[in-house]
Image 1 (cartoon, rainbow, N blue to C red):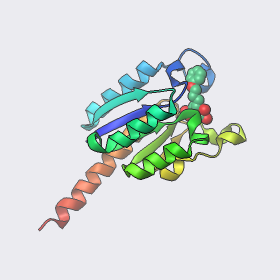
Image 2 (image 1 turned 180 degrees about the vertical axis):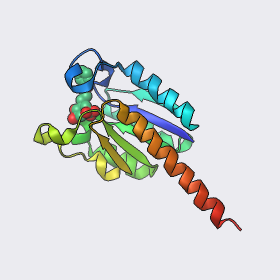
Image 3 (image 1 turned 180 degrees about the horizontal axis):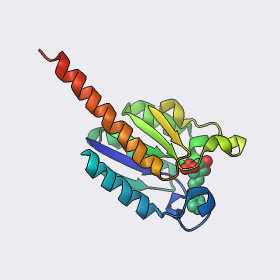
Length: 154
Ligand code: CA2
């Protein structure tokens, strides 16, 4: 199973500012942890980050050719981007939305995420561990789908 892990705007600054909100780990640390967790779970993980909404949309559109699932922290685009929601709905891959902080304990404008409408599940508030939780959930979903498939085979 191949999983695309996408990070949105400003997450390239992880570990350099606001550690009280987002923790001390850098984006490189987060990506390394995703790759390692993926290896343990038998997933092939590819990580990308962009501050550019168009780039994120293009990666999502192209994902159906190469990936089986998406983990996405859309960052501030969660609260604004109907376009990212539409791209995820269009590709139809299972997507897990991750937020490092608990967006529901923060300012009201962070409480709504357009992206959640296109997500299979949402993880928020577990720090950067949320990315690994997302990979765990996708691996379990994949294993369950394979069991169901083999049981219904003639
Ligand atoms: O909690 C999250 O993961 C967020 O997606 C992070 C976004 C925020 O707009 C969302 O409401 C919740 C912000 C990402 C900014 O990342 C920074 C990291 C380090 C220093 C400064 C910004």
